[in-house]
Length: 260
Image (cartoon, rainbow, N blue to C red; front, side, top):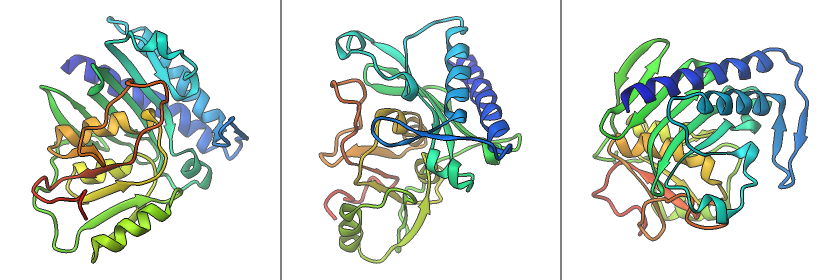
């Protein structure tokens, strides 16, 4: 598992390099998919790089990517283990050029992520994790183990979506009471919880499975939780729809974040 994690880290960096080549060119067009979400050449460049790299690994598993998600549920429900990929998470942040976008690669086994990489190309920042191996942050070549902050701050630090606010989130934060809200794009919100810089990420708006799987693994291996509003771990490939239910990401398991 350790060598596989290293291979996936290298692949995520390679995909990130392909993204940055387009990001720095100031010459990228934006299309819109059927759900009106934006798509750039960078999404596709990263997608092709990752798919080719995963297919060339010693052990091959099926691949479900945001850019190739049209796979019938009757087929994918047979998958015990597969790759779940978001080649460029935070396309809106990419277009805004604020650097808050990531490459997400996760290995799913029996509905849960067991190995993952979240790479932030604009910051040369890499988060990686695998069951039985650990969870790591590599910042400009310096690697360290990370963990959540188990005792939440008196005034919790909450990360929220920069591009996708919702009325449900506003209501939740009103109930939560005093807090500090840090707006952030892409799966970086999970990673701030995983490394102890934030206490809570409530996602009370739409996401897809490829948006969350890699970062969920990072949080869980760092000692945090990613749960639905029923308190159950977020699960993958359990239904025809690839949309996630609302969920909470938190570090302090002794506090009832759901019942706020």
